[in-house]
Image 1: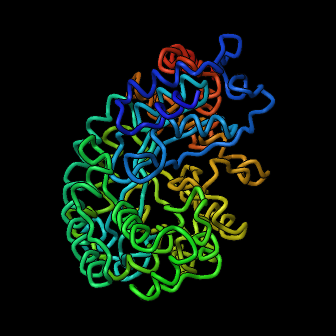
Image 2: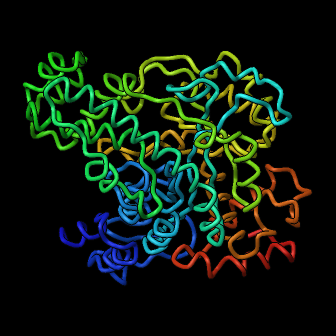
Length: 468
């Protein structure tokens, strides 16, 4: 079984090989085969009652920065008891097909998307934006914001790859320059320099359509630090003496333990605050295209463009963000800009915000008629795939919107007119809340082992006016 698990999570194998390894798991017995419908399945040591019903639509994979292949991400979601999982890699939708196939193999809902940074420095009409000089939801840049494009129909994945190719190419150039800056610091401190091709590019999935992020560079730097100081008690002092990095007490304690299984990721988190600001280069216009251009593309392929709400940060969920203020002081203006750009949804992470923050954001979403999408950023081995917050009474609607997103993706893959936000959708005259309700029911009615095959029958059912 350990060999099979290693194959499932082997980034060097082709997606088809990883999926074959997933199918070969001897714990997926025929007697445990899932049945259609959310929560009506069993398997791999779990009964239907063990399903938490939780969902996560914001999982990163090896195609941006994560310890998990798409197949392994689906398996980890399944083992955590999730009912549905979705991938959103940075500037890449390359994980989508594999993750959805793995989710189908496991009998849970699956959907695909990507995350990117866009510019809010100008309004769609070319006039100055009030967000141009503000930090929106990006700790590194003003006027630049993270968004997601979710629910990408399978036939549109190649279009997404073509759309993102110039973004990836521009980021590659900037990443190379940041690595050069990092090497000046590392070499000056007596550490080995980073070989960009071997330590960064070849450790990524860039050549397979993935993205290189700042975390790839920091991971390479972390390896150089471990080579110099070792993993253990000496590393804190070594980083302080050589690079002037002061490690707070909590991460210092984690890094003092050489047996820590998350060592690389914990050290990366330290370098994210202690090294990255010294080498960071602001992205240009080719890498961060105007928000409306990204929204228009998403709608052209019947995907769902979503603004990613961050909110003022107190204690960081992932431990790599310092306390800082973001959108909360100017939410009315922000939602005006979101409306002008044409966004259809807002995505947020319930564990990261207070109840008061989410209540306020939900109010703006209701007033602006935006779909609400939940997801928890997964890019470290230390993070849990669970998100029990979505089971709270005030947030359970996020379960329905996830199932609506799953149905949307399979429906639009079968017939683009049945995209949730398509103007050609026969249900378009209905209020968004009613469409989400109908699509949620449809998502839960899919045969989750064969969702693509079961979607046309559900579409026909809706054509006849019968909601699942």
